[in-house]
Image (cartoon, rainbow, N blue to C red; front, top):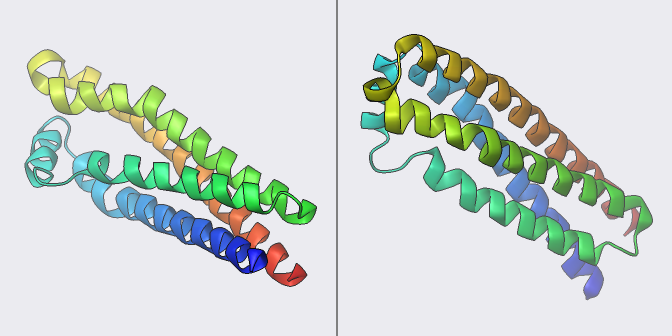
Length: 161
């Protein structure tokens, strides 16, 4: 019974990670091109579009859920040495991605979308957007690595079952 619960926890973490990966890729290739194409005007249009829901209403709870499911999976696979480190590596990647968001992107979000052109020049907003997109690229790589690591861990656990 414990083996089934462990399998379910790893599968759940994999599922959440893949949702996160798909979401961040959607944001990268569909949302961000529309937000960053004509700074600062596109910021205003983007904010108008995201009045009801925005990435900040979606990603923090999903990231937290990924950390929780990763922690549960890590605890349950601890005795499976070949799986343990892949699950932990996945968790570390998502925590690194979340830390980059909190430390670098959230302050830039405030500059670009809260303060905006009322407070900052267009040149400063363009520079801030470039910095934001560089950190976003790092986040995408972390998310891809975290998804790959939990997938490998899932496969290793499944083979041992």
